Amino acid sequence: MKHPAKKLALLGLCTAIAMVLAWVEIQLPPLTTAVPGIKLGLPNIAIIFILYRFGWKEAAAVSFVRILAVSFIFNPATLPYSLAGGLLSLLGMALLKKTDLLSITGVSVAGGLLHNVGQILMAMLILSTAGLGYYLIILAVTGVVSGIFVGLCGSFAVKRVRFR
Amino acid sequence: MNQTNQTTKPTAHGGGRKFRNDLIFVAAILVIIAIGAAALFLLREEGSTVQVEVNGTIIGTYPLSVDREVEIITGDSGEELNLLVIKDGKASVTTATCPDGICAAHKPISREGESIVCLPHKVVITVIGGNGEEPDVIA
Image: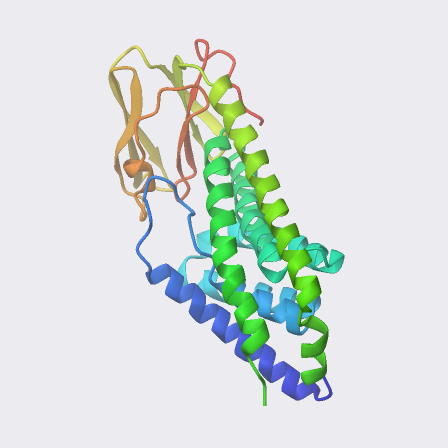
C-alpha cells in the first residue's frame, strides 16, 4: 500500500471491527453450558480479511491488539487462553495460506481448530493436568464447524469489500 | 488496493482445485478427531477415585464408593467455594461461587479421565483409577 497513514487507519478500523465482533459473540447465548469455550470465532473474520488483504504481520498485529483490548475490557482471566489460541491459529493459517493449497474457507477451518487446540493446551499448562482430552475432542469438532462458517464470511469479505 | 485484489482472487481453475483440497483437508481432520475420540472412549474405564486439584496442587482424593460432600475453598481469603458432591458412585459440583457456573452445570462424572474444571477458581476435579495413590497427572 502506497500510503502508510491510510494503511494504519484501515488496520485500526479492522481492529475495531474485530473487537465489535468479539463483543457480539459475547452477547450470543451459549450453545451449551456443559462445555465451556464453544464459540463461533467471529473476530477471525476480520483476521482472515487482513491476512489475505495485507499479510500475516498485519494480521498478527491486529489479532494481538484485539485480544489484549477485548480481554482487558471483558475478562482479563481469559487472556492467556485467548493469546495461546490466537497465536497458534494465526501461525497455522499463515503457513497454510503460504502453501496455496486450500481456499480461504479451508485455511479458516485450520484457524478455528487451532484456536481451540491452543486454548486447551494453555489450560492444560495452567492447570497442570492432562485430563482435558474430552474437551479437546469436542472443541476440535466445534472449531472445524465454526471455521467453515467464519471462512465463508471471511472469503465473502475478502472478495467483496472495496476500499476507496 | 486493486492490485492486491488481483493476486488474492482465486481463478476459476484454482478455485475448483482448492475446493477439492478443502474437502480432503476437512475430512482428514474429522478422521483424526474420530480416531482420537474412539481411543479416548475405548480406553476409558469406570474410575474409583475422585481427585481434587487446586492450582495444580492435589488437595485431596476421595473414593467414589462413599457418598460425601467436600467443600473446596479457594481464594486468598477463602471466599471462593465449589461444593463437590459424591453420590451413587458419581461426582458433581452442585454449588459454586464462580462467575460462570460452568462447573456446576457439568454432568456428574464417574469414568476414568473425566473431569470437571472451574477455571476461575483453578479447580480441577478428575476421576482416576486405583485407590488414589498414583494420580495420573502430568505435573
